[in-house]
Length: 390
Image (cartoon, rainbow, N blue to C red):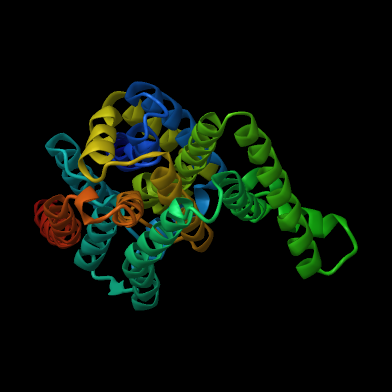
């Protein structure tokens, strides 16, 4: 009975964390560029991103969830008390960021909190996983910002008509989508992409199948947008921007739900709870957070970081989608705030430095680093104190 009670407390802390993530990271970042480009209203963006985040959590959330729950510390398994302390510490820090108007990096906060309680339990650092995580965290601003900058410059190039450049970018997104993994395409407990599903059904080399299916998806996406832009260029750009926002919102659910429910994974075995049910619960928490708390952060990101138009918004969302899916594939906890803010800044610089608030960016980076260190220290101390009392 005591174990069940602690599990319920841990579940409540996990739902609080899911709400905080939905209100801040996964709920605000995907459609912020679209709102900044006046392609969708703030309230409608919060509503749609909640639904898509729930879908992403259920269909793509397993990889990051297992990584957060089982791969951040070695030699020990998180106890129910440790899970409660880690989730509560991280959720409070993220919630403070939401209400203060600054995008705390959720992945930094949760990772720091889980590592902190794990070390307090006597566990060993998982250095190999830390190197993998650090590599993506450090590379994200350069990759996301650099690709966004290059894409925005391409779209501003008067020598390349938009009716050609924008559909070509849609083709790139289509090729990526063909290789995205979903749980409903794979066998029980696994995920597969359209490419691998087709490869298993036809007698042909996988490389040839991958190239063929990717090119087919790229061609369909490019052709569809070309027809739309040919009919009405401005409307076609808005449609593309909204599709990109939807894909990023779906990816956010697949990545961010693991930050909320990952620490619960070690607690599920004695109760025989399926991971899908837990993913659904976490996804619902994200949805509620998106509907109730995301509009404030959407406004902050869309208006405070950069003056965005449709072209720069498209440039920001394409690398955001690609990086998010890379993180989901490898099971790496990643901050959507870091991804989208870096991409927004990169696309903003394509229009000149004046489009970006440097002071805001410096404060944001400080908040990211501080959240990691603070979460680790607070969770370590809190668990040590609770363990001494118990």
